[in-house]
Every structure is written in structure tokens, then in C-alpha cells.
Length: 452
Image (cartoon, rainbow, N blue to C red; front, side, top):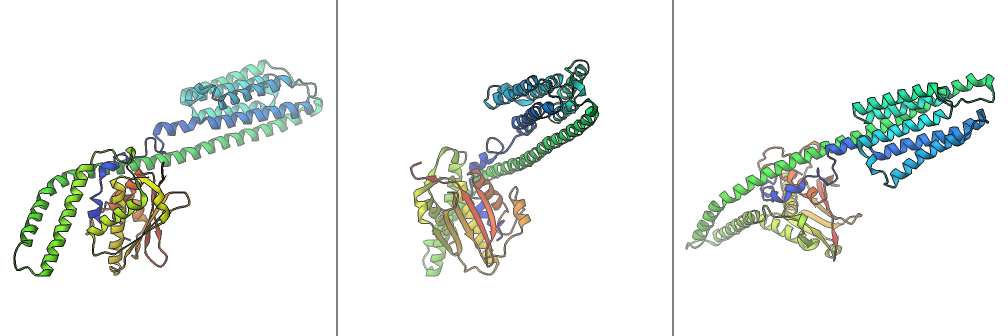
């Protein structure tokens, strides 16, 4: 289906209704500060701290009782409980001031001091777990500003220096095997530190990549919406300038119709001309009247069935020679949707392009099929089916954000406006291959139950 045709229909849409279509602010798309906030996501820091607590508890209740039965485990468990209490307080929302980069620095500093206290009671630098200070520093380097990261590294060096001089020594039960167990502990600590750092940074990079992709899409949508606003200004000027020539054409058509001696076929053509001129005036008046008004954000709920029939009837008046078969599920009579003129124009443009696709494929007599029903998610699903030759996926993706240039039948902005209008209403526009040949343009928009 040549969805970039039908420019006459696209130019009728009300761009003013699409001014708020940008999804960059509060519509689910991230902003640049939100992308930066992904680095200090509290959930990841909580998970990192739970790993520290788990490692401390495992050493206190498993390792020390086996290797040094006489070493007190109570201080070690107390440090683990303090860190667990910090996590529980954060989960309960009692320490919201620890959010953000400044809060992340404080949290990592607490983790560093927690490990310092644990190692103070667990042998100091002689404990192989001393290498677990490094994941704290590595995480800080990946999420904190340079000044805070260096401060955290300096604190880690200070903790190490203090533990070198001050700590409670550990007396192993088997002194002869002390070196063996020390090397084994170093291996385990190194593996744990490496896995922890890779796990944290890999997850961070994945989240940043997703956020950056979403931000790029939001910027593209913003650029598209700016183009739509520019089209709105052009449309307003065109509506003003076209009023006079259309009025002149209507006067001439009326004068011709009053002449004597016209045959029936000529009078029929003149009647059709006057009807089309009236439609043009109605479109321009609607464009002028609706421009600048608040649209779907402020209401405008209509029952889905009548809205669909009215939109299809308006298109049929503009293309009386084209066939249209409309199928509306009876269950839609109990649902309403919030729609402005831009959504109706998007639907009409897709129908118009389907008719053009049929004609281009040599099937001008084939009616365009429009089917409307509820989908599995309770949304209004409108399928516009043609029998054309289809359209390349690359052209569809490109036209989502900007027009692809001029065409014989229109300006090539129809698909871009259709995407913008549907997304503005919280919906989605997709294109599927039709079994047996052709394309299905599928609109899915939210519905409201009756009485809502």
C-alpha cells in the first residue's frame, strides 16, 4: 500500500491537535536527567548491599566457626545487621535523602565503612576478604562524578591503612594450614570481587543503552512534532488564502447551473462540483475553527461506533467513486473514546491511501475494507485493508518521523501525521502483510467503558 499518497487528506488534518504529541515529558519517554539518574538507581545499590550482607553472614556463620572456632562471631554479625538495617530503611522510604549522586556516594561510603568494621573484627588485612573493598571502589568509579569517585578511593586506601595497623587478630585452629587457607580465601575473594564488578557494571551498561535508545526515539518524536507544528502554521495560512478562490469557484458553479440549455449529464457534473466545493469549505472552516483549541487532553469523548461511521462517511463524500466496506463490532456501542479531529483525519488518510493502493494495483473497483473491534487488551482495533502491492519496511520506518518528499497524489506527509495522531492518543499504528496480497494498516487506541 502506498501510504505516502493521499496528501490531500493528510493536509486536512488539524496539526494543532498534535502540538502536544511529544512523548518526551511525562509520556513514558526519559529525559536527559532521567538517563543520568539510571547510574545511581537505588535498586541496584540495594542489591549490591544485599550481596555484601550475604557475604558477611556466610563468613561469620560458616567460615570462622570452621577455621577459627574461638573467634567471636557476634561483632561480625552485628556489622552485617547494621548494613541490612540500612537497606530496610531505604526500602521503607525512611532515607530518601540518600537518592541521587550525593546519596549514592554516602551509601557507598557506608558500604566501605561497613566492610572496614567487619574486617577490623575479622583479622584486618590478613583476612583475604580485604579484596572485597575493590568492588565498592569500582562501583563508585562507574556511577559517581570524578571528585566523589576519587574521594571514595581515598577513603578505601585510608580504611586499608587503618586495618594494617589496627584489627583483631584471628587465631586459626590449624596454624600449619594457615597459608593454604589464606591462599584459598584470596582466590575466593578475587572471584567474588570480579563477578560482582562485572555483574553490576554489565547491568548498568544495559540500562544506560536502553535509556539512550529511548531518549533518541524521544528526540526523534520531538523533531517530528516540530515539523507537524510547522505544517499547522502552513495549513492555517493556506486555509485563509484558499477561502477566496473557493468562494469564487462556488459562485461560478452556481452561475453555470442557472444557465438554460444544459443537459442532464452536465447538470449532474455541476452538482458534484458544487458538493465537492462545499466539502472543501467545510474542511477549511473546521481547520480554522479547531486550530489552537484544546483537544484530546480536555475531553471530547464519543461512542466508538458512531465516531467510526462519521469518519468513514466524511471520507466517502470526498471519494464517492471509491468503494468502502465498513464492519463495526456490536460490542463497540458500549465503549467510547477520547478523540480529536487529528485521529479521524489519520483514519481517513489511511483509507484514502488504501483506495490509492487498490487503484495502483489495477483493482480500482475493489472496496477498501475497514474492520473495527475490541482487541484482547480492551483497546479499539481498526484494520484498514487494501489489495495493493505493499510498501517497503524501510520506507515505513523513515516516514514515521518525517515526510519522504512529494508525490503525484500528495505531499508525502500522510503517514507521518497518522503516526503522530495515533501516538498522541496513546495508541499505536502498525502495518501487517495481508494474506493473499496487500497491506493491513492497524490502529490501536484506548477505549473507555460506558459511564466512565
